[in-house]
Image 1 (cartoon, rainbow, N blue to C red):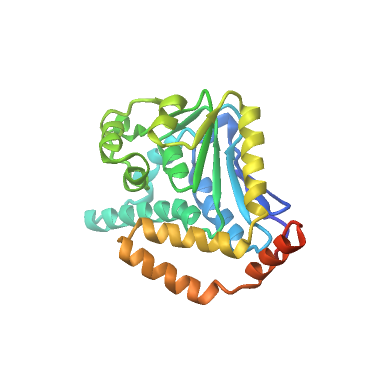
Image 2: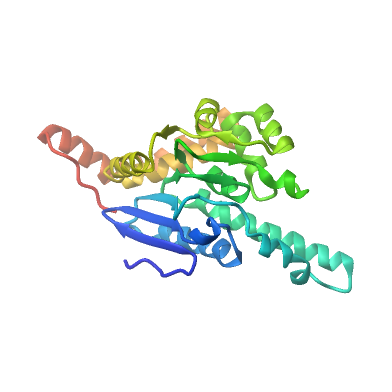
Length: 273
């Protein structure tokens, strides 16, 4: 299936790997109104495209993402204008909920999403990668919850997702101070899985990881993401019940039979999408 064409993203699909690249390098990939919507459209397309088994999310140019485009922030008053203050605030709430949903589409996508991060990953950029399954970075990457320096509360996912990655104390420290976290600290605190000395090493290693995932049972990979996301947000008992129900429906699959056959025949398994 041919990938869609976007104005702010470059997207490709090859051998089960979907590449989604933020493509506003002259603006450090700041997320403008078009990019918010295209992120959701891209990941909804990946979710419903059987041949897309895993996604690499990257950013063109020097920086991964400088956060929300400040010109978009400046236009919000005009977007929500209404003679009635209550209706104006209702419009703002609906706008915020829509932006949240644009990023949540990454989490909803049934296929694993790997973030490959270089340079600045701040504000909305950190919200973006917090939705991903795994995060890898080059040595010069810098992370921060920047909203406090704009006099605002981060509102599209960082405050809700980071505590499960790095804990409440560190999330609060970063949110209250807006300080920068370098790649060394980011790996130490669990914000990223690993960092690499160069962008080339980052790119090569992330693609090898994506190839490894794309070679596994697509049905089982989709099930893993579903079960782990559910378990993160529920009690252990709820999570165990959920996976029991999931496997009652999908455990005895053609993919399992293919795994056993491949092991017996000493070959690599081959799976339908």
